[in-house]
Image 1: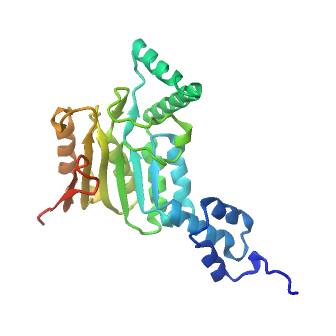
Image 2 (image 1 turned 180 degrees about the vertical axis):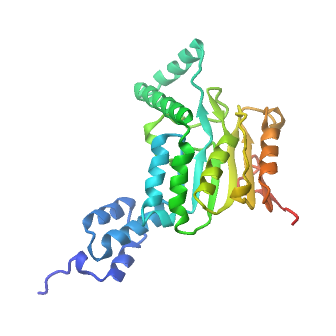
Image 3 (image 1 turned 45 degrees about the vertical axis):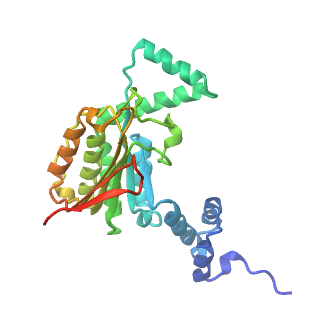
Length: 288
């Protein structure tokens, strides 16, 4: 009886086909990466892992999240898979009053593991304050985009109130529903500026920018020039949180005006109405 053929002895093209089997789970691919670096097993499993799980990267405003993004972009197997980058514009407001503190602590105590939640909330506050004070978030992101530029793939950017599946999310407190919470603010413009400026420094081509999610308690940030990013398509998919109408959100008109004035290369504007349907939008091409 012939001895069984070992996986590592298979030809590279067959290994690649096996790694691309849709029945393989994330854990299976990770295990294959750890099996061997010979005969392309490591590379094939890594490329398939990147194709499935790193096509879109979601970020939160913490150093860990941004630095993890850098490492993914530098990876020769994962970096080429990245096509879209999402970034939460939600920011925690640490200046609560005593009564607000009591109310928040009471809410957290009503849940299992409230002490862990408090620790994670403090971690988030510290991370956001550190990035803000040191001012190096753009430098970190620029390093990531510089790595992505080597693959010469156009990118889509999204700033959103959603933090689902973000890198490093397990290290901080992220409420299931942030929209409208008075202890949080929306730094939409600041987040757009951060992403676009970093992408420009990294010489990445930004194909599309989307603003998606709930808006409330808007931070008045400077937009800066977005002309170098050469945005050709902008999508506004916003829904007011905790208000009966968009007109009652202070600064929303100013935010949209800043975006349109600075995106001087804009050719297409999409207005998506989340109140009707996530797939409904009005499409209006700009005149050349």
